[in-house]
Image (cartoon, rainbow, N blue to C red; front, side, top):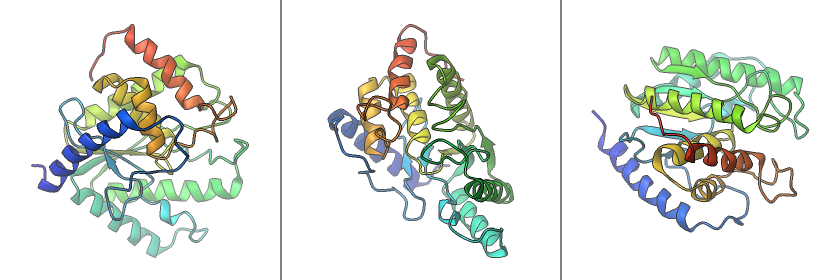
Length: 252
C-alpha cells in the first residue's frame, strides 16, 4: 500500500513537471533548477503518474557522497550504504536501476581515469551489496555519456534500443514496487531515459521532454558537437521521437 507521502509527492510532482516542461525556455542556463524532492537523496524526483503508476523516480547515485572518501571500502562505508538503502526501502522502492558504467568513469576527453575507475567500481559494488542486504532488487544497465560505444558515437537506432530496454525494465519493475533509476549525477543519462519515457508513454513533445532534461540539470554544452546548441543526447531524442511517431507504442 503506497504511503500518503508517496502519493502526494507523485501527484504534485507530476503537475509541476508538466507545467515546467511546457514553459521552460530551451535557452535556459546549465544547472538544476528544481530542488530535490528528498532531503537526503540528491536530485531525487518523481516522474508523477506514468502508464498508470505513481512509483517511478529518478535521482543521482544514492551513494554519490561516498565518492570522495577513502580509496578502500571501510566498515563505516558499509554501514552508511546499508542505512541509505534501508531508507530507500522505507520509501517503497523495491528496484534500483543503475545506468553507470563501473568500467568507464569519464574525463572531459571521454578517456577512462584509473583512479576514478577504482573509486567508481567500489561505489557501484557497495551499492549492489547494500541493496541486496536491504532486500532491494538491483539492476545494472550501463552506459557512458562520451567516448567509444557511448551516447556520443552510437547510432540513433542503437540508443533507441538501449532506451527501450531501460524503459521496459522500469515499467515492468514498477508493477511490484517503487523503481528508482540513476546515473552518477542524475542529469544526463538519467535525463535521457526520463525524456524517452515522457515521449513514449506520456505523449510529451520532444521539446517538452528536452526542456525538463535541462531544468533537471542536463549539461547540454558539455556533450555538444555543435557549439552548445544541443547535446548529442538531445539530438538522439529528436531522431527517436520521429521513430516513435512512426511505430505503435508497446508496453512491457
